[in-house]
Length: 77
Image (tube, rainbow, N blue to C red; front, top):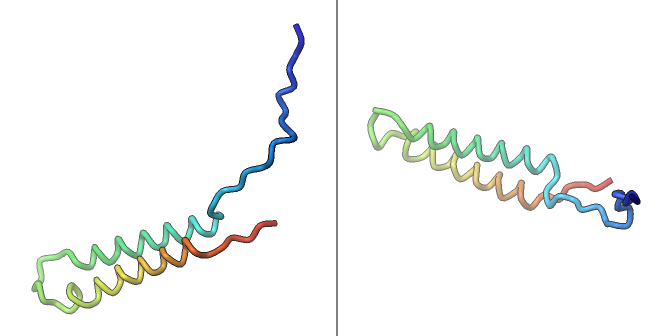
């Protein structure tokens, strides 16, 4: 019985689309968006500054940071 060589050295190495830093930035952006939605909840007045101005700005900042995380190119060594 002949053994087949399992090693594929001629196959090119496939890299991920995003680097480790990009995934960390994406997790941070998700956390910022969640924080913005947490700021929107509560039993206080519906027209409170926190709910109408601060929370939407935090959510938009989280989406902008996520956009940055997607577009940032990772360094290849």
